[in-house]
Image 1 (cartoon, rainbow, N blue to C red):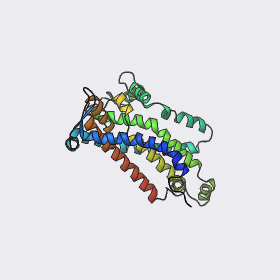
Image 2: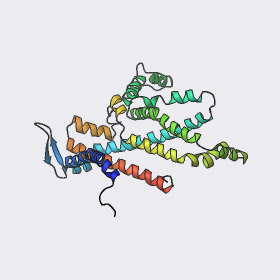
Image 3: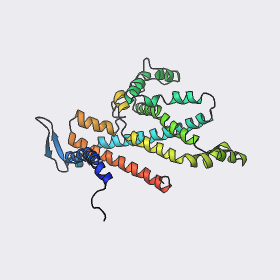
Image 4: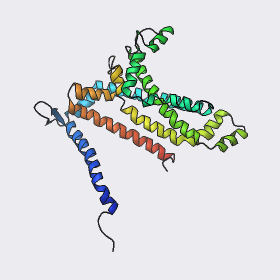
Length: 290
């Protein structure tokens, strides 16, 4: 006779599942409630019904739309540069014989730094009076403060993110390159294939799984990029680097508009879920999830 009810394994996992569910569901439900409320902090936390006011405000808010445009520009440039430079660096590293381990160890140092440290270091290096990068650019004819111009400030914070996380892409790609069967590459060479033909038809198809995983990891992280911008420009100058996480922080903790900040946060969460689903769909269509 078959015993009804949950299995032994499920009963053992049930307490942990309940804790995880409460840690996830309670904040999410609270966020939803806050998005339809005016949150008052004076004299204790109170939620006053705002109906759809916060959502209607989001539709008409040009500043938030501007932050989304900046976020998408930042997102595209960061991912593109990190993936391209990481792959190139991994290919170069894979062909290096002596000293490869030393180069790899030096290359991955930035990604072990806290983003706040990277921001402080970048701010020092780009300082217009004594920064090393600013000094090198002055020799090339660029005058002025890198973090003072709208375009240069955005490109500078993108450069700091690229400097920190390109090693991650390179490391993942290098691991994939090391797993490519040597006989395949040797057979392509025997058949007369050149270096780039070997990369296109042999190497990249073999490492496409790790490349897509690296792209997914960096995409999810780039969406919530916050620390370096806060340390270096705090969203300026003139909101040129105010991507949506910075706008969210400012709305919630500077202007104390927690209800409206909840709406921005929900939209950011929806964007993250859409991006993750898009990547998973691509992986599935290419048969990379099996």
